[in-house]
Length: 143
Image: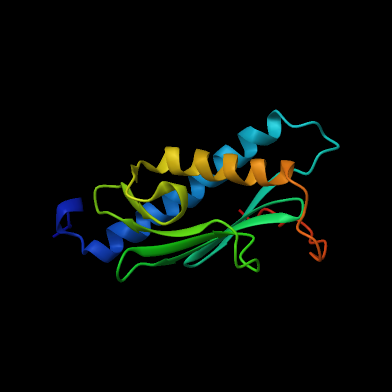
């Protein structure tokens, strides 16, 4: 007997939504690169089970996900204590419920969250690097 989507455990559903979110990050990162001059740093996404990294030049956005709870955390340039960061919950209906930073209390669909994170990282690239920061390379895309 095959299981329908409604019969799957919530953890499985949240894991599939996480994979879709990472795919959306890749899609919007590639789309953003189409509009960036070749000499500028390009967006790239790497991912492993339960974590993803969106990088552009010396800046990066890191996401960590726990399928058991649906909880996740994100941080822009996480080595800086005062950098933007927050958490979100992956709901079984595919929506993300945010806490922290400028997204607190917002409910977003996957594509809107991915677009906002790409925009946030792009805006960070327009700001001067904090004093004392060591240069970091962007991440390489892994498919």
